[in-house]
Image 1 (spheres, one colour):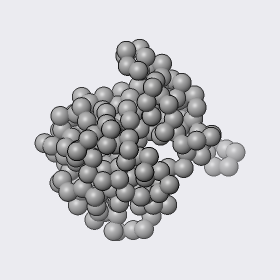
Image 2 (image 1 turned 120 degrees about the horizontal axis):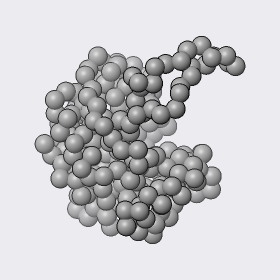
Image 3 (image 1 turned 180 degrees about the vertical axis):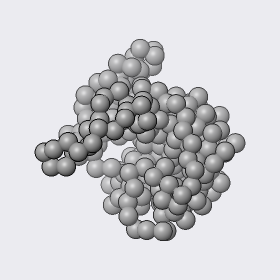
Image 4 (image 1 turned 120 degrees about the vertical axis):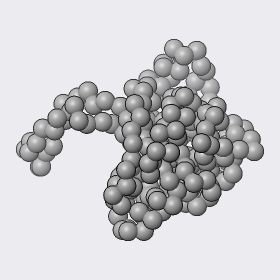
Amino acid sequence: MRVDAVVVAAGRSTRFGEGDKLLANLNGRPVIAWSLAALAQAESIGRVAIVGREDLVGALESIGREVLGEALVAVVPGGERRRDSVEAGLRAVTSEYVAIHDGARPLVEPKLIDACVAEAAKAAGAILVGPVTDTIKEVEGEAIVASPDRGRLRAAQTPQVVRREAWLEAAAFSGDDETDDAAMLARAGLEVRVVEGDPANLKVTRPIDLVLAGALLAERGEG
């Protein structure tokens, strides 16, 4: 199965400090360029749309054209919430299933993208996940109220591959936001499958994440 992709790049980078994390230099190229390059190398990905902050649309289009060439179908402004940005991206592409990827996950490997796309074809969607290694506590105020069994927990990664119309229909059920696309499909009671991801598929959120990503890429011999 070959699908379109939406790269979400409309966040405010509030926890990163100065500058936008997606344009930060990572081993010689912007963070988002690594994410786009992985999608370009994946056999399952056809066209790509980027959703970015309105003030960065020009810069993102320049990077997208350089990395993707004609595979870049559109660069569109995002919304106030993640769901608004994802919807804008989904309306810019046309494939039955769509791979939605965080532009701030520059270390995803093409083989994982392809595996996630293949698994999504069995249901309404599929996502990459990783194990939870810390003990998790649920708290209210200053008190612990629950200690979930971490053996049943997984940390969500991207890409998350969804049936395009199913996501749009689920979003229409409610105006509430969702933190990821699997949760949006679950809102409609739809099955979302999981694919074991990679601990290196980290999200650049804080400056220390950029340092770690650079070291991991250097270990791969990239950049």
